Image 1 (cartoon, rainbow, N blue to C red):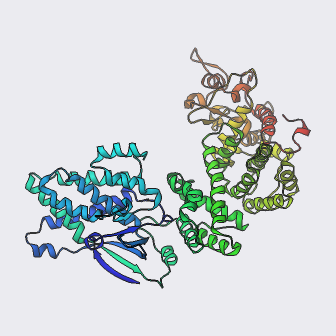
Image 2: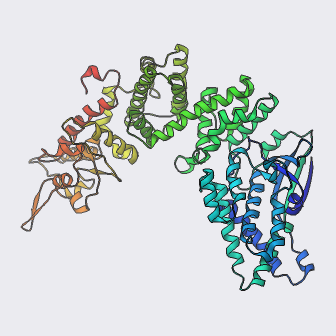
Length: 629
């Protein structure tokens, strides 16, 4: 291995091509993280050169090191330019080429700058060449080539818009956006000159800055170096390699050793991940748990395949270990990643479309944040795909899984064992070679420990009435339950509606009831008896029977006011019941229409009424036998 620090001119000023193999990740650099810092570095050098008063002073301006690139010699036929494969550094090299093209286009129409334009062109294009692909000094990975060509063919931003439209390329492409950014900042900096001489000087200084004062450490590998090992240990500037990048590189290096048809493998199995990298690389989750979707998929996939827990930081190591253990050809791995990835993408897309039973399941699963179920779901979909009868059985299974999760959530049972539990369920179904609702129920009903049992109606009802659910679960989960209740209350005679906007959870009896809903002592009541009634009310105010949904919050005076209508200084005042009914026509509040008062007995009665509905939404295998609908 040989390493040299070279100026950009020395990297690009002679005829050769640096190309990124198809297994490299797409172009992922971003404005704030990489383009802005690079422009600031180049502009700083240009300003220093602009302020120099002599050639000697300019020579003493220290260069800026723009990181390292790793290249591997690539054999080419006679007549083609010298070629090297980019092992690491594609993002840097592509960005520099986009910068050069934007710079070139900024001075394209000025005949007095033709010499400078030729120098820039020399950094971008090889000439003369026989094949079009050999024209480019840098040739990015397959998925980015059309966008890259569009940028290099364009003459300015408006022309680029036309070219991209003709080529069917989205203007939001990162490569296109990089060009537009650099064109904008270069043009703006050149326009700061007060006359033509000042603009010409700025062009010269900017060109000298990027050609002479930006340096790369170029590492040329030899036959004894392991390209895969080097790739795994290097990151591009500010954009760490994802596990998927390492896995892709690992698999396609293995494919090379198998003499497989690389382009066919990529097109057939991996193109989805590169083509839709905006989806796969976007982060999913809440707060510190946010991670790229493809990381989450790979973690769940490997948990499924290895039947063991895979830490977020050990995905690539787990994949290598798995691949070495199963000893399957690369096509087998790629086919599995394509198929299971398709299922995972379906899960994500269904979350945003909760119309079907499956859509509601995935939306609720996301709200409950029960991602440990995903390995089981991946195999469930793989097993049931492509068969209508199996698809219907799958939907029944999802209903039972949802019932299991929701009932345990309301009963405040631990979620810690879910990862193991659902892997055990998966093994049970695979052993039977039958993913049926009957087998799922058989397995779950055998679980009797607190960590894994499926609460029956007796346990569910007990918690439903006793748990102060307003504090026991998160607000999104509580809204989920109340929305499910409201939807289940539709009848053939009920007008359909769609709830939109942010719904607020409202207490019918206010939380501050002691100030506004006085508990009047009974005649001859002992202090102990009064305290018991007070404690009973405190125990019920946050229960499900006292909670409802409103699309618009009541103002505090109404929220804390009396339940029934009342008179204040001769003026009729609307009570809380009529105010709720005025603001809301949803099914969940129909119970209040005939309510003359609101106290502990009404809360319990409404809780029982809602339980008859919820037991039918999230059924237990014994629910129907007990008469719940």
